[in-house]
Every structure is written in C-alpha cells, then in structure tokens.
Length: 412
Ligand code: GLC
Image: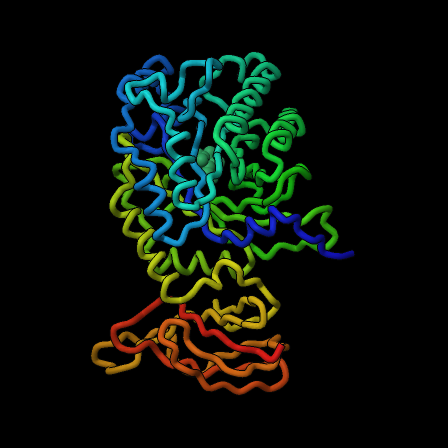
C-alpha cells in the first residue's frame, strides 16, 4: 500500500493554507445566525420579507477582499446560496429569490469575484445542497436536484475561473440519492481545475466521500493527521471554524475566541497539513464586524513576523513536545514553538512554559544553523542522531507571538 500523489490542483490547494469563510445572506439582517429561519420556525411568508430590506449597502467586496489579503489569506469561500434558499448571484431566471431582485439590485458574486481577481485571491463558492424554501426540495427531489445543477452551472459559466465549490447539506438527507456524480460532472465540464468539497458536517469529520471530491472537512473540530495509506486518491484536508459561536452574524454573540487561540488553531491545522478556513459573518448591511476585522488583522501581523513557511511547509514526521511541531520546506525545517516565556523581570513578565531547551525527535537531516524568524537571533542547539535540542531563548520583553518559529538550515 502506498500514499497516492496529489493531483496538481489539490497540491496547490494545500499550499493556500489559509482561507476566509464568509456567511452572508438574508439571515444576516436578523443577526441571530444563519439557521434562524429553521430554528425559530419563522413562517416562510414572513421570512421572505427580508428581501425587501436587503440592501447590502455596506457590502464592499474590495474592502473585504483587501482586508483578507492583508491578513495573509489566499482564498475566500463565500456563501453564494445558504440553506434559506436565497442567492447572492443572479439566478438568471431560475427564480427571483436573489440579490438582483431586492433593493440591493446587484450581483454580489460578480462583485466578489472581480475583487478577488483584483487582489489575487482565489474565489471559492459555498453552495447549499439542502433548501428550506424550495417546494421541490420536499416534494420532487429529482426536479430539485436539476435546479441545483442548473444553479451551479450558472456559477461555473458566468464568473470566470473559480478556485472551487464548497457544498453543504447532504448530511440533511443521508440516505437520499443526491446524484452527486451528475453535480460534480457539471463542474468538471466547465471548471476542470476547481476544487470540489462537500462538507461532511460535525458528525463525520475527516470522512472521505465521492472520489470526485478533493478535500475532506473538519467542521468546528480539530484536524487529525490524514492516513492516506491505500486511499484511492489524495484528498486534501480543511478545517473551518467560527470566530465566535455562529457562522452568520449574531449581534448578541460575544463568545469570541482570542487571537492567541486562532493562531494556535491555525498552527494545529498546518501541523497536519490541513487548511484553516476561518469564518466571518458580515452584518445585515454587509459589513464585517470590527472585532472580526481586528482578529484577522492580528493573524496577518503574526504571519508577517513568523514567516510564510506556514503555507508551503509540510508535515515531516518530526515530533516536538506538547504542541510543538516542525514543517519542512525545501532544505529548511521550521520549528513551531509554543508557550515560550518572556525574558526580563519576573515582577512584570508572566512565566508561561518557560524558555530553554526544546526537544524534537525524528530530525533526520543534519542541522547547520537555526534562528528565530521574527528577530533573526541565532539559536544554539545539540543534535544527537535524530534528536535535536534547541536552546529556545524567551521572547524579548515587549513581545509574545504565542507561537514562535525557528528556521533551520539543513545539509540536505
Ligand atoms: C453547517 C451549517 C451551516 C454552515 C456550515 C459551515 O453544516 O449547516 O450553517 O454554513 O456548517 O461549515
């Protein structure tokens, strides 16, 4: 048994490393999450009134995409249609439940894709497969599936080259025939290089499905190392996370993760080679909440200090203690060191995990030199066979990067 070689587009997707998820729809106006229609059992006739107040007056695709760019994000997955059934794109006559038929009057997907192209960010389309509004979804599933394929065909043909599709909803009718082959064939016909993902939800994280899929998902979880031994194809892995407790905007959702937690989670993903897809939920008017913008900015600053090995560095069977790990890129190794303390004066600095010797095992290549990527300081080390002990100095007073990166030159 062997590990399959990733197809080119899958290898490229893995190197994106960091993506932005955006949940935006009619529900954003209510500010109670994207499931509010279903959970609060709002009558459809009442919910549909949200189209009359949907202006997206602050949905500024260029602003959002440039913000993402500054945060070090490589691709953005935007909800083109969520479970509520409303499309942010022009459905070209399939129905009128779309952004162009609201006071907004614009095709938001067109604006999004144009902004992505301008900033060299890869656009991905989230698309629901289940539908809480469409009559056929309940009464004529086959006809509904045709509508779904026609919708996807529009997205495949009207917006230029697309990075990928992110489907979500098959978990709602587990035993139904979703005619997946036919859906993916539409994509392969028009967008042969698009990544295809179909979210397995919170109950089946990491599960590989239809062979046309290119990545497994770890919704709101912790990615585990992929065992690709004997797999029929090489699947990438991606973990999506909320910054607070909802995907869609929640005006009373204060449950924010800290910047430190986001950085550590990003690292935990890359440790096993999974992409990190971090979500923001714009307000009803389409603006990213300040708190979310600030957190994104923080991650961008962290990347600019610790270096870009977080994208193309690969897991390499080197093991550190605790959360510490290593990635390999070319003839360089990158050691990600957690819980370092701040050097200085114990009256003011908090003792965390301490500084000093950190051990890594499985280091086969002979190390020539090691330095911190943030300040260039050279680190002393001892290598005994495959065991490497790095003398990790603490942060200088005034600094705490949460995870610090030591770059090593090897003799390889
Ligand atoms: C889910 C939810 C959904 C959200 C998605 C993101 O499966 O149904 O609302 O869009 O996860 O991963």
